[in-house]
Image 1 (cartoon, helix red, strand yellow):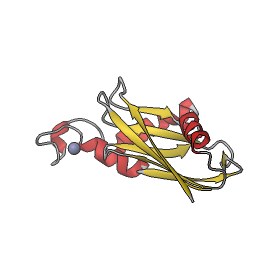
Image 2 (image 1 turned 45 degrees about the vertical axis):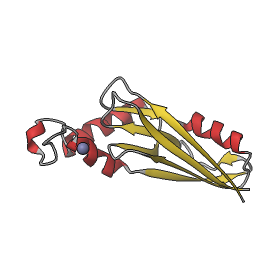
Image 3 (image 1 turned 60 degrees about the vertical axis):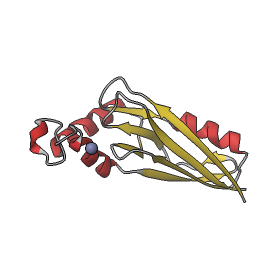
Image 4 (image 1 turned 120 degrees about the horizontal axis):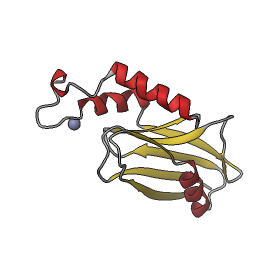
Length: 138
Ligand code: ZN
């Protein structure tokens, strides 16, 4: 069995952003040389997500509004976590959107269903953060 590890780094300009990282994951898969196996992609921070969904801007706005409805950023004072920080909403948003995804690798390709794309979801950005890609197989 082979394994391959890679980190992707991000520093978003905005507090919240969705970034399509499918191409980066495909590049890592190519570098690994693995043809059959699994790719794990996970956020390495507890205020960011990795998730799979459609790359459609209306849907991304819907996610933003839905998440703001569930866990609004402000007022910061509404959250007990916000004693030394202001990112309680980001922890909650990350929990809903998930920590990681696993994708099957078949014939050297990500074995997606229709319209599936991998996203990095940033909820407390403007600083350097990273995503782990781990690929195992042969
Ligand atoms: Zn925090």
